[in-house]
Amino acid sequence: MTSKTSPESPLPIRTVLQMVGGWIGKLGTVWVEGQITDLSARGGTVFLTLRDPVANVSARVTAPRGVYEATVPRPADGARVVVHVKPDFWVNRGSFAFTALEIRPVGVGELLARLERLRQLLAAEGLFNADRKRRLPFLPGTVGLICGRDSAAERDVLENARRRWPAVRFKVEEVAVQGPYAVGEVTEALAKLDADGDVEVIVVARGGGSLEDLLPFSDETLVRSVAACRTPVVSAIGHEQDSPLLDLVADVRASTPTDAAKKVVPDVGEQLSLVRQLRDRGRRVVSGWLDREMSWLTSTRSRPSLADPVRELERRAEQVDALRERTRRSLTSSLDRAGDDLTHVRGRLVALSPAATLERGYAIVQRPSGEVVRRAKDVAPGALLTLRLPDDRLTVRTEPAEYEPTEIAPAEKPAEDKSSKPRKSRKKPESPETS
Image 1 (cartoon, one colour):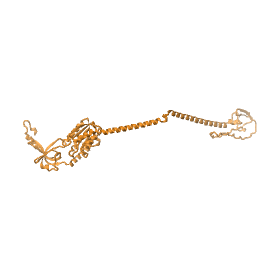
Image 2 (cartoon, one colour; image 1 turned 90 degrees about the vertical axis):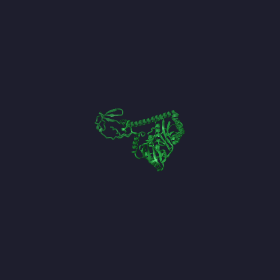
Image 3 (tube, rainbow, N blue to C red; image 1 turned 180 degrees about the vertical axis):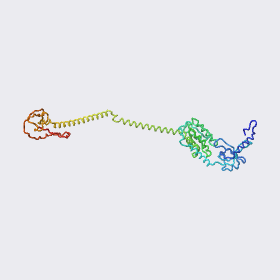
Image 4 (spheres, rainbow, N blue to C red; image 1 turned 60 degrees about the horizontal axis):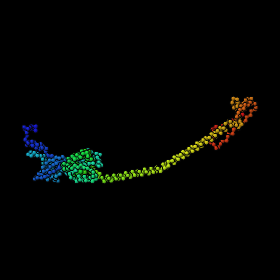
């Protein structure tokens, strides 16, 4: 229809508004959720504004007094409600509003069920895993603080942190911490502090409140923004029993804003005491080590090898002399025993030698060819024989004679020297025969 309009043939405003009203009327009735603000009643009609819990969006709603009073409990400003509405467009004024057909308050049980479903969804994505949480810096130079305007949480964090470490610096972002604007302002402040290179840790602080007051800190948009921060985030929302989803995704959870100040900065008194303890401990360790080394050095210096080094050399010289004398005695004894053995063997050889037999008056009878004559009957009369004596030889001629066999007594064995130990001979020497 708009294609048929032109500057020469425009549509009347009433026609356009009627068309808008017709389009809106096609929407029909819908259920919507929001937070009530600007609640007022005039006559038989109740007027209120329904704000989106996350975005900065609102719409006017009119409800007959009977519909409003039929709601149990009766809703007030700030209450979360679900409203069955019918969109209306007034052509005469060109205004838009919803007409409430039924109002249902959102109970605590339903809110908790929604939060539990959101918690399970975010946990499945790994946003609450402990391995993705970062450690806080030991002594941050600048701390970012997100809190309400002139709130007690801001004073608790600043005063306790400066009492613990007076040199700490803060960058404070004051935002709405409840209501429809809380999520947007907190998310914007978080992004601003995260982009600041001087800020080393961010604290999100708020005092206690009801479940509805703390709902912005369980919003999915804010939780995902905290998970995406590069700067460590400390959550200090409500009291110990309060547990919004921001506590689960933050790197560190503090039970109260005062506890957050204790976790962010160290106590200068405690650190000085720790330094003194470590210094004393180091002094004791070094002193003990020096005492042990001095004791070892004194013990080493008192040893004879260092107290009188020449005495050790003399002792070693005495050992060398004793070993030399022992070696000399051992060698002399070995030579004496070998000499005695040699003398005994020599005596035995002399005693068993044919020359010794000849010295006792015997002679060896040989033929001119050198053959030894052993029996007289083997010699012919007139034969030349050689008599071998101890010192020389004698040639004789035999005469005929009658043969008479003679028994020769075996030669006496020389007496053995009992003082020596001659080696035993396996073969007994034979006595020489004489003619």
